[in-house]
Length: 78
Image: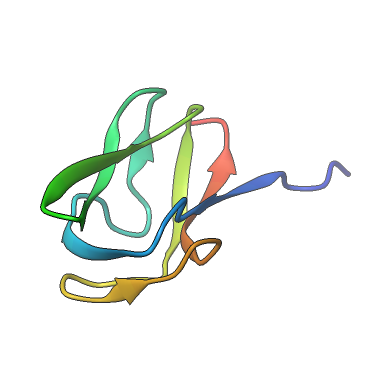
């Protein structure tokens, strides 16, 4: 039996969550926009770094996140 591999997508800075573009169960491909952050009046897209399926969405629109906070968890492979 193989162990499921997951990837946590984390915030790289303090920011506000503007929009979450995915939901649990959604398949994503490398480069897809997962959510949009706003920091210092700049919009920052958070992109999928690999193919996978969304298993957890840990933030909602309007949340404030800190550097290192887990935003989304993906199961590797689509």
